[in-house]
Image (tube, rainbow, N blue to C red; front, side, top):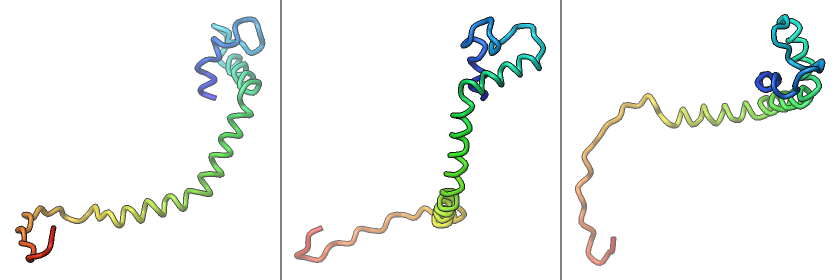
Length: 97
């Protein structure tokens, strides 16, 4: 609905019941904006919001579980230690590296 508000004053033009009226009381323009939203995109917005809620409820526990497992395995609390590289050990004769 906020996206509708961004273009509503310019999209309809003037002279209709859905038009923005400069200088009109806020309640009147709010009523016109709600009518505009209902007529143009409210059905799409409600359907999209309901789908988002369903998808979050269905996939949310699995995604949160994966993120928690990754956080445990990442060991963010472990101190970082820099050790010198191990000395090169010569390979036994007859083997290739």
